[in-house]
Image (cartoon, rainbow, N blue to C red; front, side):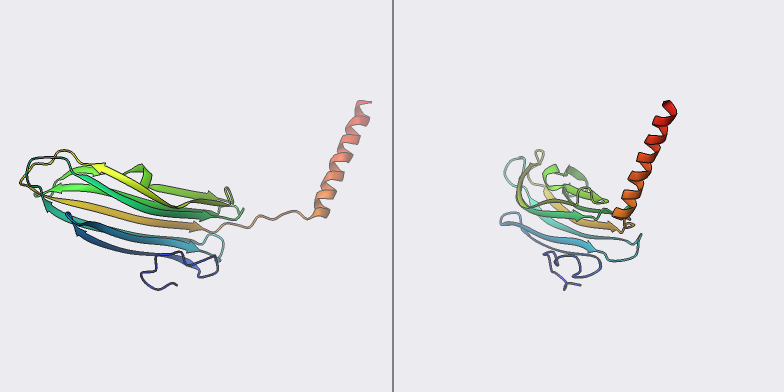
Length: 203
């Protein structure tokens, strides 16, 4: 397994077997900005048919601030770097999915959630089943986002909460048996023979 706080994919299948998730978050302050989030979740399997695994890494960062001056809306801006990959072989019952989920909330001093947003641009999922498609992916892509809260009251304390999670799930399928060319040829001859019998019966 990769070391802790390794946020790049470990590499091609075969690097390790199983699923892993890791998360790290750092928050600055409202004036300087700065929530930094790193998540990774990945899985590779060479296990028995039906083997399944899921890993999720979740972070939550909080920034508390006092709104001074007059009541106003607060803009939250950022850039989310996303890369999702899900890949399967054409095996019956095999599946893989990768998901990133991000939620922003604003709480007042009493702890009541007064605003919540789950921007679709930075909430993505890809999936692959039995080799369809063989590889489903997004990115790597940097997605800018801007959120505007409702008007907040001046002289009050608020907490901005940002939660981010990455999830990877895999299920190993049953390898599909491909008929050998000789078997296909025999099947073809059988169909031709059936057609000939039908023709004779009609005559």
